[in-house]
Length: 280
Image 1: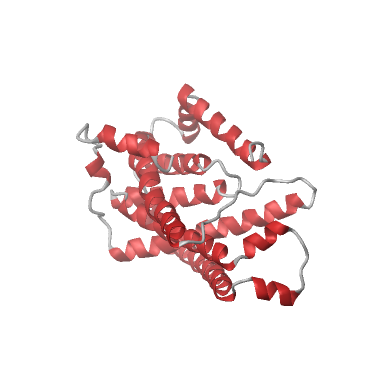
Image 2: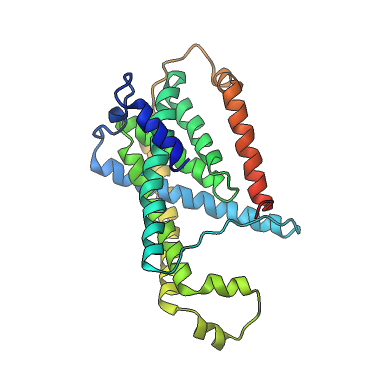
């Protein structure tokens, strides 16, 4: 989903219909302050959901049920670092937002804008086919969808997505540079002095610094989101061009479409396959 499918969507929509590709990349009709605030909220909420889910996965692991952890590594070379940063921080946000907020969201808005935001956000989570990412990606997708509808452009969503992926890419690169992942892969006990001698301290300290900043993001985002809900609830209002159908009827109509059923089943199966590490 991060490359081929969005690229096909981009080519297909060039110059066609009123939802042309240039409409997705229109100038945002919101202020810079709005984009900055919702970038903090989007990134922070994603990490907040990730913390909660990580705790749940840890509790599940105590039962003895083993879940395969997807490997996020980077080749510790200038070329490897450049490729990781390009793929994760630049191309993934552009292509994924083009597919989800550019095509899927704009073509689902007829059901109602909040319905489209939530539905496409959930589908965005499923598209990751990764149990560790599915829930925080869905939360991020919902916020990106809301911001896209408000801005009438996918650029703010790309910005939010870029910041989150940039942090993840930096963590991946720094973890690889620290040598910690290689030592954990050996799965042997070592003395603290030997551990310190083999691990690169500066990259490891930067990893912990990023982890601390992510925690700050999560706390600030929670505060900002609560303030938005309490003080500015009117700003959360979105249009509903399909008031005839109830929310339940909309979900039933959308998720009983043959194509949607096939896609959802395929993504769920692939998520379970990845979780069990069947092909690893």
